[in-house]
Length: 135
Image (cartoon, rainbow, N blue to C red; front, side):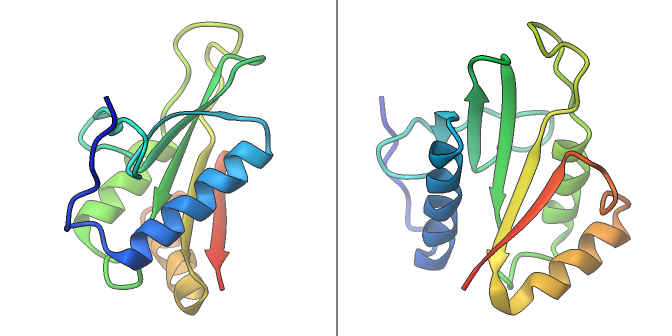
């Protein structure tokens, strides 16, 4: 059953989520859950729910997507999400023990802020962390 996106999700956030969904689909991933109209709401992974949960079916590898507006980027919640989502590993399947790819998208205006926050929380150099921006 698809969840109706609530008023808490800003138009800007929804544009970011949609851009990442489109990128994942273009890359051949299956969108399992997303904080976007027409999709089931993502389940909690540890302390937080991601914005997008996708899967590379051939590799049996989950991908996590998170969209952040400039206003929310430096919140403690966002920092926890960056640490938690970038530290996940596959526990089953063909990709067992592989690091889960974690993609973060922000507006172009705060891409430098994203780099700073990822550096601050110690995940900027992880090979499974991917940064995107929307112009």
